[in-house]
Image 1 (cartoon, rainbow, N blue to C red):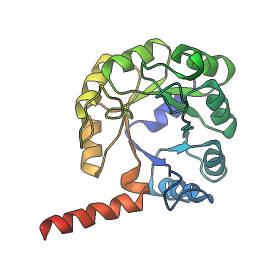
Image 2: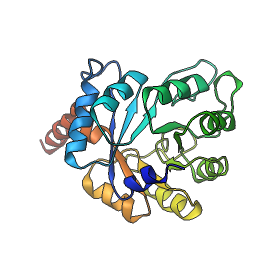
Image 3: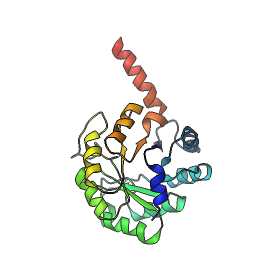
Image 4: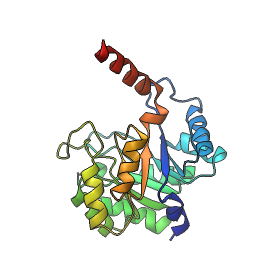
Length: 229
């Protein structure tokens, strides 16, 4: 049990340093710069996508890394570290915690969530974080042996609330129903919202676009000014 890593996250900010291929800050080792800046700011952890970015960040940052690999398969809607292949690559790249889709949806290649969790627990010392969208999924992930939960996928499954703000209700209810840490993630746009998540029972808060996606930050200003006009 890597309990010190979990304890180091308590009550803190985890910065998600990710970029998609169509974004200006994709590739060229740029995510490691965001991670370095996050560490300097006092963040307690980094969430990173792809083995390459995980390796780059691991070389320059001492904080715990929550690693994932987003890949799409034609036979499943699951794309966050969807199969054992991605799990092994993320661990080999240096992730301390593997973030994976923890929903109850069918996974690619006939694998199950139990298969993937068992792979991590049997063949590595990495911790497992299940990204979920409902209370029921969180409870099921805990029963399978996951070490942490994150509300990442609320709003990204067809059956979870589709809303602009963070899913505070999910954070509140899930924190009361499980014994493992619940991380609040998804659509957190301000320090006030992050603090509210902690007050509602979140163990830690994960913020991405509001910190590491300049085009999203700028657009909020542009939209507000346009509305005022």
